[in-house]
Length: 191
Picture 1 (spheres, rainbow, N blue to C red):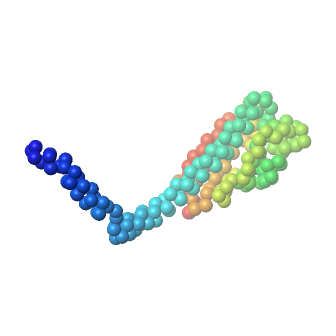
Picture 2 (picture 1 turned 90 degrees about the vertical axis):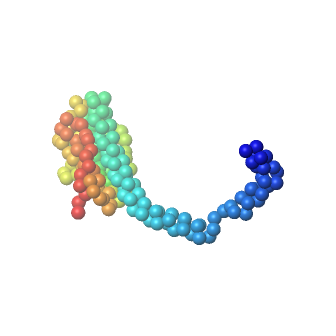
Picture 3 (picture 1 turned 90 degrees about the horizontal axis):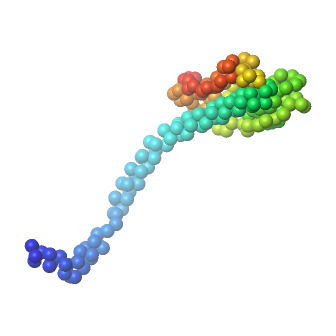
């Protein structure tokens, strides 16, 4: 045993191991090509699934943006003890008489003039830009939602958010009840 240790510690033996490692390090061309082929195959399998994940996250994020706006409008109505409305807006300065909310929306105090319309005496609270990614955000009949000073709405409303190439249960439905509370639910994408 002692003789083996003495042999391993000699400079000549260590030098021969170093030379041996030096001549046999690296990859061969075949090993490199096989590794690249496996990486390409794995990438091709993962990319379509990753795209679906990105679109589903975008839909959830955009649905939450509208829900945040509705919650803000309700809380502003209670805080200001005045009617506050949220409406679809194509220019982020006036209301659009449209059920297409993908162009953006605005929140404003709605204390005088026509209900659901930003009049000269009303105050703009906040504006949202149009949705990205060709996302459709529509409602059946409401081009505005009005919150009373009590936090209640004048009518319950629901919105449908649909991203392009929607799959599975990734359509988002944003509903506002007559009590003023909003929530989102996932629904099956249309065929």
